[in-house]
Length: 326
Ligand SMILES: NC(=O)C1=CN([C@@H]2O[C@H](COP(=O)(O)OP(=O)(O)OC[C@H]3O[C@@H](n4cnc5c(N)ncnc54)[C@H](OP(=O)(O)O)[C@@H]3O)[C@@H](O)[C@H]2O)C=CC1
Ligand SMILES: CC(C)(CO)C(=O)C(=O)O
Image 1 (cartoon, rainbow, N blue to C red):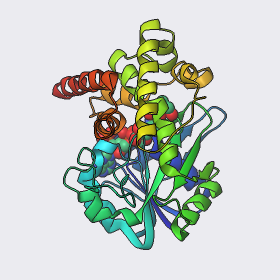
Image 2 (tube, rainbow, N blue to C red; image 1 turned 135 degrees about the horizontal axis):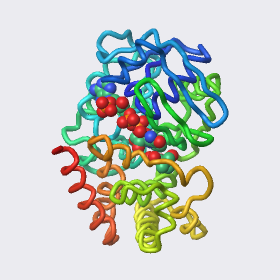
Image 3 (cartoon, rainbow, N blue to C red; image 1 turned 180 degrees about the vertical axis):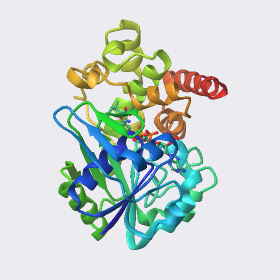
């Protein structure tokens, strides 16, 4: 079984470290920059709440074209980096294999199997390269509950217990999905099969649509943000907009969602820096399209007003532009 973690940053390095430690699959990594150099020199170190370990990383490259085809490509790139890697990801998938897209927000394959036109989502896959090169029938969805950060090159830190939710766009079973669930389990990573992957995407978006942009804009952690009354109100409004859009598009998440608990997370979840704040601090592009702009676009299609998303998204875009000019 060959497994490649494509985009081994915070989340990908966590997964890769555990795959490599378990030796359950022949694992390769696609990474770049100082993190790649450090992993080649010193291996990959995982620092969790209860354990710390270092594993050698024998197959680690910034050129996916040098790797053999893979049974599973675990894609842990940011949503914004996906289109430029579509060709490389597509070429890496072995016959019968699949790419698991582990990411936050609405994924590029969303409309596969849904009766919607156009099938592609231009905000997420502007030239349709993911659709044509990866092909949605070879894609699996992945939802991540796992706060991670690269704290120094070669070192990934995780601040709380993690779990993952995996599922096919048609919510069906396939050998590739079974392999993915098995490999995660063998690595000691908790992964469950989704009964409805789009519902699970919406449920995770309830956390990210308020949390990531508001932390990125203010540079506050989730706990600090939740303690600020003004931000608490903006966060709740964003959650309600996600709920309204999800419902209008066919995913009623119910009336008993704990809106306040989502915006005011307790325990270790409150302490970390959300991934979009990590992007801003590193001068990297943000995932504003997947987290806010695409849900707002669904709102337009279904006649649901999203006034708070419509203000917060341009603010994140502006910040994004400012940090990348540095
Ligand atoms: N971090 C977290 O705690 C969580 C993140 N998520 C989600 O998981 C997904 C991944 O996030 P995260 O792990 O934080 O992202 P990271 O930015 O940490 O990881 C992506 C990595 O891919 C690298 N990369 C990008 N393009 C290439 C390329 N062409 N070749 C080689 N390497 C490349 C990046 O390098 P470079 O840095 O140089 O750009 C980076 O190291 C996102 O959708 C995020 O929202 C979900 C839950 C928690
Ligand atoms: C919920 C949270 C903040 C950590 O799992 C996340 O998804 C992120 O950092 O993007």
